Image 1 (cartoon, rainbow, N blue to C red):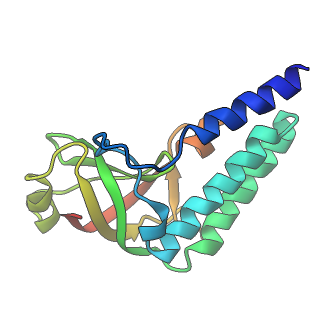
Image 2: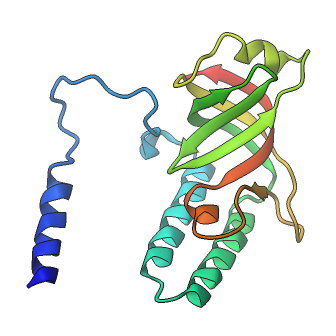
Length: 175
């Protein structure tokens, strides 16, 4: 009985989250619409979504660890080069020291301490938190010959659910 009520409740909740335009203002910090993303960014985000579903369904920590390892390997295979071009996201944080964090979707973030003086530092001085941006740059290399350096909390589920990646930005402009 409880399972049936949960399933019905979840279905009603999902149905109420439709894309109808009801005239309300949109949140500028919302993740970009996936259909508008470059193919490599879409694949990057899809790999996370798939792994996150498997992580949530995992019966124990051993399986969770295996899911996380598989996800990290899939990232390495998705990104054939460390470069990314015109990925879409929004500014999550800009520090006075040039610390820049951009959310690229699904809780995933890329970040760098942007050196000053630099062209990118000049670009970010006119941006604010929540601004939708198009970013280009290079992932800093990770361990085991992987294309990306996954930073953040190495324990628990947060490494997969809210990952941060170390990058070097070459372009940050409003989108």
